[in-house]
Image (tube, rainbow, N blue to C red; front, top):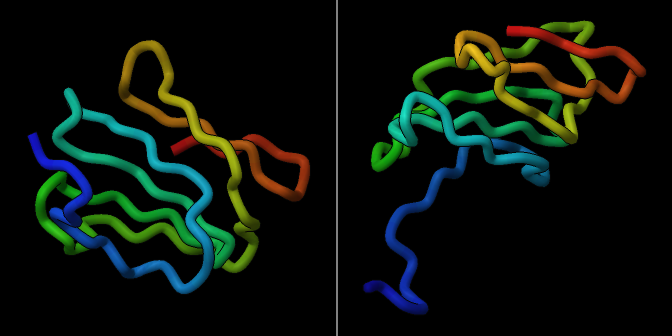
Length: 84
């Protein structure tokens, strides 16, 4: 067990990270940030594999996975729900 030791740093976001949501049997995860970007990462590799950033995208402070695990939904700060 690792205690009090940083194992990996993921550092692409420019502002505070709002959510970390694990997907694909915990092999990947989604991060959202106040920088209005959504990143998808492979666990253990600090390189973004998918970058979602659109001019109309607002900060997304909450993300959940759909029950079929094909899509994720996020609560956007412009009072909308986004689906990817």
